Length: 231
Image (cartoon, rainbow, N blue to C red):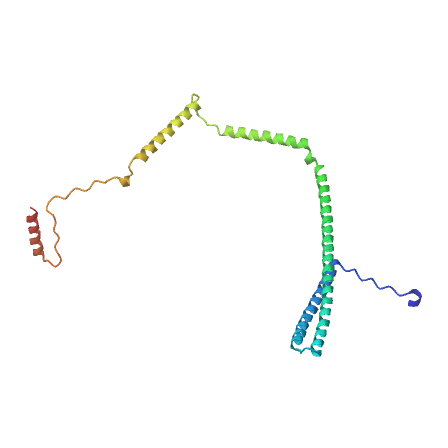
């Protein structure tokens, strides 16, 4: 049956994305870095061998082996530089692709917002005449509210002959009186700086206190002697 109708073709593998390609290039670059590092260690070994070998066939053989390793190292370095360039180009293309997608999404969002704004502006709520009328109504309501507040704040039982200018003059006079009182208080001496009168001297004979260790009789005799001396 397969010979008559042919076998079905296998589905084609999905194409790699730019991200997958960049990841593959990075892995190959790391592999080359590891190979170059191994060749560097091998070159160090050959360099030591050249130093230890005597001039002649042995040293020439060591140099030839070192040259082979050095050529292989140069080849790997060239391949790594090529991979660096390819990876840079892939990342640049990936960045441009992502930027293009974001631009498309931005344009779509702006188009959707434009449609919504156009639909909203067609609403009766955006009628300029209605908006002006609403502003006028609000202004009238605010004026009415201010009149109501002024009416409620009006004072009752106020004499008709009471002049507001006279009240203002009286208020200014009170302020001047208060300033004069403050000035007088500021010029006076504070109570804590005033000298208090000393107490009067006591009258009569002074009281002599007995010394420590004296008997009552000795204390009385001492007091009499003190009175005589002061007299």
